[in-house]
Image (cartoon, rainbow, N blue to C red; front, side, top):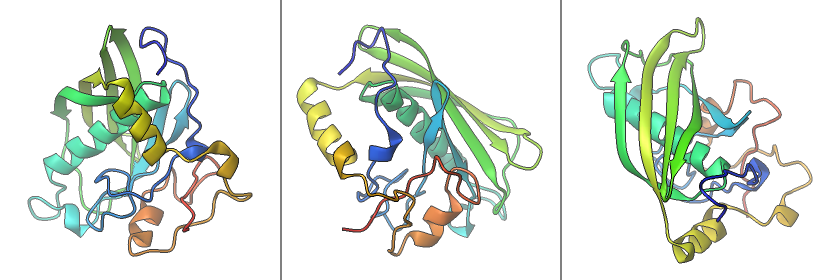
Length: 197
């Protein structure tokens, strides 16, 4: 792990695997969000189009889903900074309801480090007019070195094993959601999908 006081933007998103069951970014979770993150300067970005399965009140996205999108974005911003951590505390402020089917963009960045603690911020905005839907602020706690080693092995592939054309789309039950939640429909060159093995 890098020194949390000096984040290192070293983890290439070309090496992120999606063949796991993470609710936020895993393909193997049939009810997951299937988010795909790409570097965005010193942070990360992703697109999210909520489907009917994300509904709370009629035609409105459930606040827990919005919170999950913000949390996942902040977690990947922390990982992008070279730190593996878990959410210790999170605050979400909703600015307006989000309707089912609306294209959104989430961006997140690390905002500070103090010993084992890393703070991050995130914004979820509408794609059409960039209106603010919600903001998030979280404090993450770095994991022990042995946990980090296991997670790196599970969630990152060997950079030497990246396929010649890493933009190959996965073929599984979650494909529709994966395509719906790529970085920017249609997926831009920063988006890299997992290849079936």
